[in-house]
Amino acid sequence: MLQVVSEDKTTKQNCLKMENKHWKKKAEDILTDDLLVEKIKNEDPLIDTCDEEYIKARQILGTLSEKDVVFTHSQKEFLGKRIVRTIATAKRKLLLIRISAAAILLLVIGIPATLMINGVPEIKAYVQNNPIEDLTGNTRLILSGDEEIQIKSTDSRIAYAENGSDVRVDSNQVRQVVDVDKVIYNTVIVPYGKRTQIMLSDSSLVWLNSGSKLVYPAFFAQEKREVYLEGEAVFNVAHDKNKPFHVITHDVEVKVLGTVFDISAYGDDQTTTTVLECGSVEMKYNTSSFLNSSKLTMTPGMKAVYSSTESGIKQTQVKARLYTSWKDGYIACEKQSLVDIIKKLSRYYNVSIQMNDQTLADETFTGNLDFRNSATQVLAIIAEFINVKVETVDDKILITRI
Image (cartoon, rainbow, N blue to C red; front, side, top):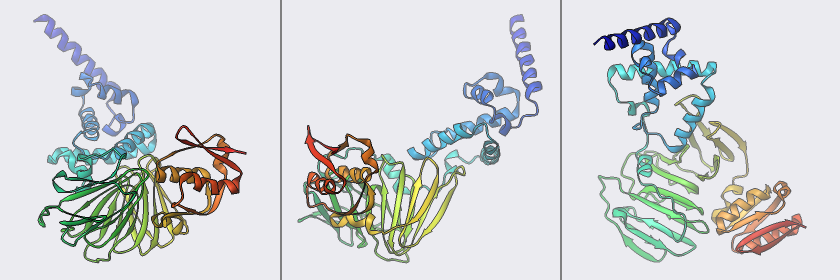
């Protein structure tokens, strides 16, 4: 009995010391102190009971790490890096004041933390719950009921009837069950070395490049049309002012009524690039302001490059055909670096291309490269202009300066 009383006194004394030492600290001040944040993360029992502000700080950290919050992988990575990078700065302090107010309000009125991030598209949640990583083998079309169709052709064509249930795959006709009152998602996976053209049920055309995946409703029954892209695609969207068309990627969302544009959002790239050929689009993207987003209206000939690491966007005027020509079977180059050309050819032909001399990365090429030729034939054309040797060794194409 005496031993228990002694422990209680010790605990109270420690609590009093903590209160005397940090009594002026608010929740946002506590969260700017690396040592105190570590104590909170390590569930220090003193911090749990000594001060209301520590409890608030603990709740904020818990809310930000709540597993049920719907974040994409790239968002989680971005948020984590930003918290670490700015924890000791004045911006961090101001930021946490805003988060503190929002988090405390949620706790007071009892709203689940999952509502902090609202407006997550249903199709994005579907993609997160149905991941597909394999980009090898044949092109695959996944219909309702998880029915999978293997497409062997290198350049395939998929066309949907207006009802979404009748689908032509090259020269074959297939049928799926579609409920007009329920969204049925279909998925096309195009491995490296292959491409496909898709006509959606609204007559919009999509050219899906190598190493890409497109998820879309078999039938657009809702007020807006949404598709999800990983990789690269050119869209020629059928105009419908009553149903805006949304292309969603892991980092950006593009809204259109009717236009032609290219989006490149490969998982191994650090950026997402959108190039508008004609019409008008609205691009929504994350900003460096925590949990905020911004919008950009693009005009024809504009290229918008979004960086997930910098959470910023850069705009330039370009010739759109340099970014959309691949859908017609060739690459249009204008002072394009050899390293960028090699990346495109590697994806298109599904081959490994290596440069033995890294100074070649600065070489540029202008002209058209015909995809009807083999990878070595295409590179041989480039070699005539920049004095390099192209050879195949152990299933790899090596480029060496002469």
